[in-house]
Image (cartoon, rainbow, N blue to C red; front, side, top):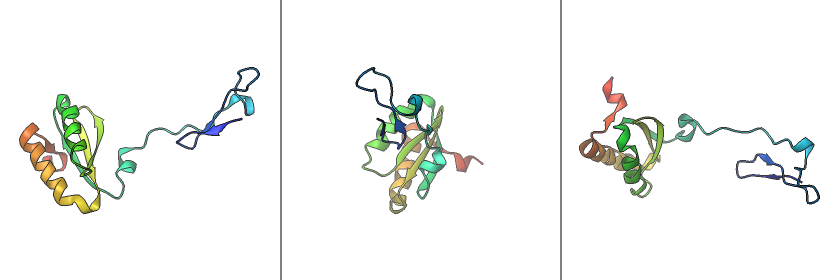
Length: 112
């Protein structure tokens, strides 16, 4: 018999007798890939930021230590997206100023 995993995909389980997956020939349900940055940040304040690729982990630790001000979504290299709840815009702006000062972060929107 199968079960659903945390992403609501059908997961086959081994049969007690032979160790073969149960269900229709052991088929799993349709796999879903990761959420896009646009989907993950929908309905939130979004700021696209460039940092040196070596600083991404440091910036992530600062964001995570900021008590829910924002979440960091990494695109590639030093291209990151900060997404904050609608009520935390002032705190996001302050965080961005600190990142600009401390690690030379640049807002992608400001580069155009």
